[in-house]
Image (cartoon, rainbow, N blue to C red):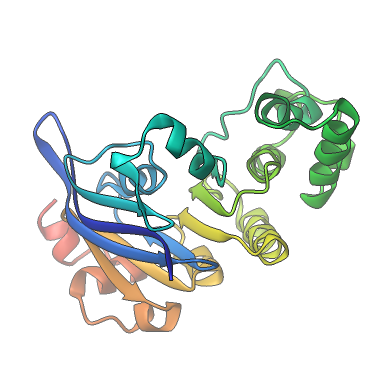
Length: 251
């Protein structure tokens, strides 16, 4: 059964269409990875799935409920089931690593202060940075900041987690470790993952299914193996990083 579904969704900004008539079903427990050339609308699709962007046309269903027709009060329980890691991590510079995780727990739960601190320390440990407890975000590396962002996104035990390019700007070894961490935490929490990446190796590592955003469309390219053998020349060019092909011919 689908946990999120888009039906004929079109998103436009200032009358410029970014996504046109998108249909997508994401099943509970699935890892769905979004790839595609820069500027084609990957983040717009992710934010539409997460309810952060309202489409001009079409329907968005979350747990079989039509998102756009729900009142703010009715949306709240669904929002609490979602977590999101933005590309820039969106950490609070003035708070320590521990306090960055405590903040959403204090704002949205009824946990006691002791329970909040214990949970924050648990997630710092889960992402492998317990030693950064009292450091500030600008005192730790980019890879550690990404781990902190993941810990904060997971602290509320979301059933659906959105990752906007979780390995952006990281070296290949750190990138692989971050995806391993995401997979491990997904298994432990039995969650659904929707992620954007520009790195096909990481897409193959994480995905159950892959979708490519190109020319206002979403091409469901299938499993990693199906994607590698996809007949569409745009997919062929993109996944192989070829300079020549239909994507660059129209650029």
